[in-house]
Length: 273
Length: 156
Picture (cartoon, rainbow over the protein chains, first blue to last red):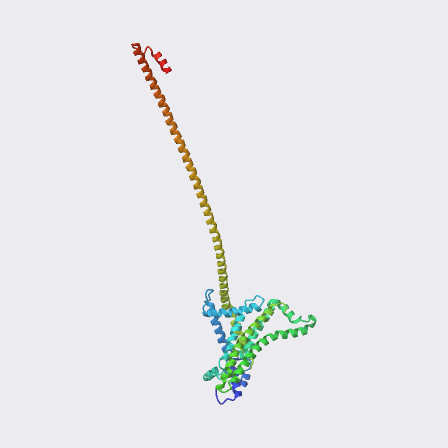
C-alpha cells in the first residue's frame, strides 16, 4: 500500500488502470481516471503496455541476436548454450506439432514463447515497486505486466489470426478456404449452418488465444494485488507461495500460446481437419 | 479494461519482432546447430572408418608378415639347395680334376717308362755289340752292320 489515504477499492482500481494517453481536443493527454480513458476513445494508446512489451521484445531480440551474430558450431559459450537450449526446445515443439514445411513457424514460435514469457515474468516484480517509482517521476498509473492488458494479448492473437487466414488461403487457394468455411460438415445443402459453425470455429482461435493468456495473467495479478492489501508483515506468507506457483503459470501460459499458434497454423496448412 | 489502438500497436510490434527473428536470429542459430550436428556425424563416421581401416591394416599387416615369413623360408630353402648343389658341383669338379691329374701323371709315367725302356734297349744293344766285338776281337763297324744291329734291337 503506497499511501494510507487510499481505500482498498481505490488501491485495486489504481493498480488495474493503464497509463492511457491520446489526443484529446488537439493536445496529447494522459488519462487520470476511468472516465477520462473513455473520453479518449479508441485512438488512445496504453503507453505502459506498449513500452514494456517493446523493451522486453528488444531485450529478447538483442540477447538472441548477439548470440546469432557470433554463433559457432564449435564449443558453445554460456550464453550460446542457453540460447541453443531454448531454440532446440522450440524446434522440437514445432517438429512435434507442425507437419507442413514453413520457415516462418519456428521463428514465430520462438518469438511468441520468449516474448510472452518475459512479459508474464514481469508479474513476479513486486506490484508496488514500479508504480511507486513512476509516481515519483510524476506518472500516476503504470501497469508493468503487458499481458494483463487485453490489448496486448488481442493484438498478438490478431497477428496469429492473420497468419492463419493467410496460410489457409495460400495453401488451399481462396476457393478452398471459402469451401472449407461453407461446405462442411453438412455438405452444400447445409451451407448457412456450415458457415455459422466454421466461422465460430475460426473466430474462436484468436479469441481463445487472447483471452486465455489475458485471463490467467490478469487473475494472477489480481491475487498479487489482493495479497498486497494484507498487513506488510503477513504478505510474504501468501505472496511467496503464489509467486512460486506463478513461475509455473508464467511459463505454462507462454508455452500454451506458442503451442496453440503452432497447432492453428498446422490446421491452416492441412486440407481437411 | 478498455480496447484501444494499443492492440494495433501490439500487432505491428509482434509482426516486426517475428520478422526480425525469422530474418536475423533463427537461421544463423539453427544453421550452427545443424553444422554441429553434421560435424558430430562426420566425426563419428570418421571414427568408424578409422576403426575399419585399422582392422583392414591389421589384417593386411598380418598377411604381409605371413608372406614375408613364407618368402624367407623359401629363400632359406633355396639357399640350402644352392649350397648343396654348389658343394656337389665342387666335389664333382674336384673329382674330375683329380682324375685328370692322375691320368696325366699316369701317361707321363708310361712315357717315362717307355723312354727308359728305349734307353735300356739301346744300352743293351750297345752292350751286346760291345760284348760281341770283344768276343770277335774285332771292330764291328757300326755303320756296316747298322741294319744287323737294328734287327737285333728289335728283337730285344
